[in-house]
Length: 286
Image (cartoon, rainbow, N blue to C red; front, top):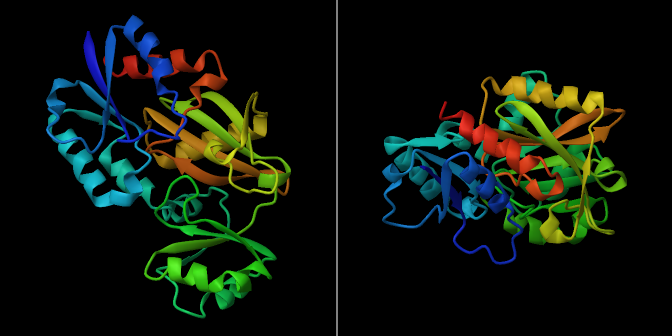
């Protein structure tokens, strides 16, 4: 049996993780999986022919340590996706790179932090009735606020304190998120595997299931498939996995996120998904 390690977080309490659904299909392909917290000390990574970044959903709190661990792993074995890709994708400034490559992204104002009194002028500069502010380095909507002309004043002190010295992005709020939902497309080895629609619970805008959103498997329409393929091409290389998140905006599909570090694959939403991911992993050994 070949040995592969899946990287996870040290405390999975409260998280929905379904990577284990790929373990039996991998075993049938002669591949055994160990799931290991990324920050566990003393691991001999050379025991594994491949290490796959999976549910490392606490890395943003220790980003430098996380990157050092990935680099340590790469010194002795293969890592997917690579530390180079992780370094680029961890900070949402990658959206600027994709926009420069012709991908339709949400218009964004970028700042290195906020000082007292700076939020309202920044909101006005955006020129949108509603906006979302979030950290450049974050996960699972941590530090995200949905703002309008009233809430921006009500919460200015709290938000400015949170973003004191913390890089941020401010974007017009895409109403398609609450009116229809967010489309998440999973790609394995560059090929589309499956797509889900994530709809936030009533009164919320966060689509992560930890906040009560609903998930459903859908068959993507041609325009969505084309948007996903364009995003894959813009990366410039074929990766073991990628998740591309879109919102319908003005009749087209606009990129919200390109998740290349530790995206949930929602394997439980489509019966063939675990097998396709296992095929993608197995193909690396051919």
